[in-house]
Amino acid sequence: MSVHQYEAKILEALKKLKKITASELAKELQLNRDAVSRMAYSLSKKQLVTLEKLTTSKILLTEEGQGVIENGLPEKQFLENLPKQISDVSADMRLGMNWAVKRKWIELKNGVIVRVVQTPPVTEEERALKNINKLNAEELVLLRKRKWVTKKLLTDYEISITPKGQEKKIELHTTQVTPEMLLSGNFKDINFATFSPNQPVPEKWPGRFHPMTELIEKVRSIFLELGFTERSGPYIESAFWDFDALFVPQDHPVREMQDTFYIDGSTEVPKELADRVEKVHMDSWGNWNPKEATRRLLRTHTTCVSARALTELEPPAKIFSIGRVFRNETVDYKHLAEFHQVEGIVYDPNVTLRDLFGFLKHFFSKLGFDKIRIRPAFFPYTGISAEVDVWLESKNKWMELGGSGIFRSELVEPLTGKDCPVLAWGLGIERLAMMYYGLDDIRDLYNSDIDWLRKRRVFI
Ligand code: PHE
Image (cartoon, rainbow, N blue to C red; front, side, top):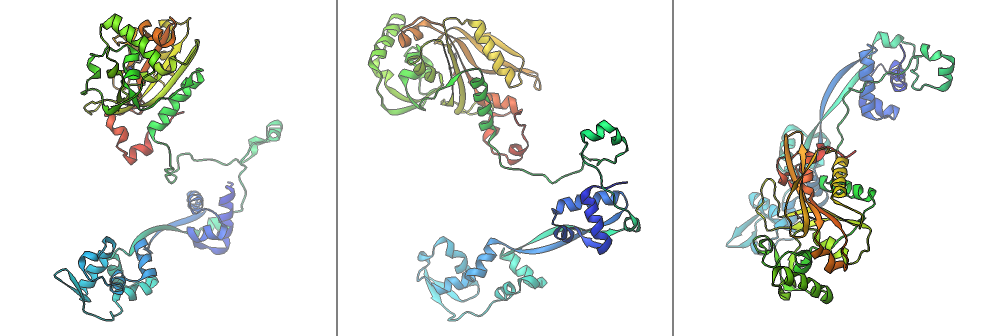
């Protein structure tokens, strides 16, 4: 029976020492304590050592306790700079004041602080703090009451060598297979290290990005891989870009205050574009008030980023944007008033609805959702409009994720001067996150539940 190289080191040391704790041995051998405990455990399974669990406690100074050692008792500090009135006592001096009253070093009379004791005596607490390494039971209670020390439980193991271990000739495991061993065939006779992947190890929770940040990064990389370019736009938009340029009539209900957050003041609108937008609105809806278009609001969707981009692009072009949007919405398990959307457009004379569905299908399958459903829908800015649902196997139901379609020429022509197909879609990322992370309530994404943040699934 051969042993691992660390086991060999431990056994070798124990042949001389006979008995030692895991923590001392770790120091001696300059190994990590967990590694020593683990190896000692595996040696004990081979009956080469025995282990005895030791539980000890250690008294540790808290930060506050350290402060008292450095700066003195709060009540003495208070006495040193004694304020005249209670109203002069700042929040961080209150504790010192209360203790000084309790000890009858001062008295409070009608808001005035009166000194009773000139030189305060040495207190039990101060004596105890001087004696921090040899506290008796009373002193410990005293200092724990003032939260200057805490008791920490430590577990250690005493490792003792067995007679079998004492006699054992140490042979090392081989940990690596070499080409020579394979060629000569002697690997069959070699004693290889065995591994126990099921042995418990200490849990580690390193810092990581928020699940929404990770999902957004993933969404971004999917679009970048497909050759899309990213764009962004302002949170505070004009009604012009959020609604008018998208051919949303000025009397459309989404524009009402109950649905949209408006911001005081107005903003400028590009004159030439506004004239063209005015013309389509007049021709189609019969009214358009330029003042309405200058109102400021928190953008209600990222489709305004696509509208802005169209005026600057030449086909063929593929762009996407990811960002926050705001709606005057009652918050519930599937609605937030502030959330993220990912928006994409494909501005290309050669694309059709099938391409749109292809992009959506590809996007969702990259996130691991292979079953999607497209339902007819209505948006003021798309001629052919479709709602996208994704099948949630675990819940056995369809989940609504957003809208898509081909932009109407009433939108594309005034913005680009061209009649060219533009595929467009806008999806809610928090909804996607609910599905991806298996949440039943959209608000849980922002509840910062530490257990969930640690244990949620990761992207691979
Ligand atoms: N803007 C729509 C929404 O917020 C989504 C959408 C984008 C629909 C592009 C069609 C085209 O729900």
